[in-house]
Length: 347
Image (cartoon, rainbow, N blue to C red):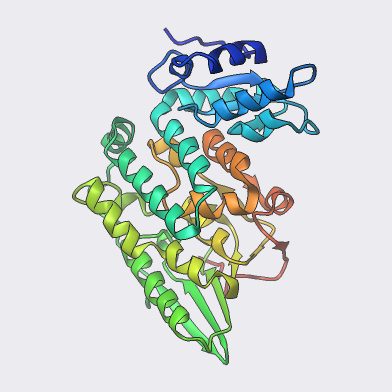
């Protein structure tokens, strides 16, 4: 039976585990404790041993949660997947990990690996990881209870992405207000087409990405989840049609202007932009772990490059929202503005 009140492992215990070839098997999605909670304060501990444990943590199949003061910097605080100030802060993460331990494992393994790769290759890894989870029991369980009878049919006039050229500037506006600018197949394809145009046209020196209506985007259209034939095909399609892949190619010219809800890929896509400007009411949320998935719109690549691997893991594992002020503090956005960023926020 899983330990409902896990103890915080000491460094001595972790050193013993790191010297045991089977030590990592105590912590995995299929063990009694699918996470590692440990004291990351290395004071009085040999630095060589701390380095050894840090290397072992990077190979651990599950999330490692290090507890240390904010000013503590050592091999352990750098190696852990999430860093917190107290064990109490870990409770919500542990509960979520227990619900979907396989997705939690895949998340931290993906974040570790993609941190060292160029963007294009990192997106390949993310897509492969996402595809593996699409075929897994955790996502299938979510899908069983949440599968839509049919995809949503937005009732908005005009194209899914409105393009406006003014001299050397190109503005792209997400235009499915009735669906809260969810990234449907229609929206995805329209974004890819617009971004391909911007990449090909070198006379476009500035690209502004924003959303109409009350929010930038609530992320992937959940009514379309589970509609592709199989995870392998989904991976190939995602690699060919992921807006984030094209956004990354022209990122130096892009300013993302976000407001209201930025959920899932509604966070992941603007994070690719060189500059992100947010309205005061903006909030950011990565709920994918609750679906038995990880961020699959490029977020395992774009977000860590802005706020780091550990904070990205915290966002996903905790499932908590952060507001514009916290996002600015972390570097997820570059500016908070009181100017109206959406041409129509009445719907």
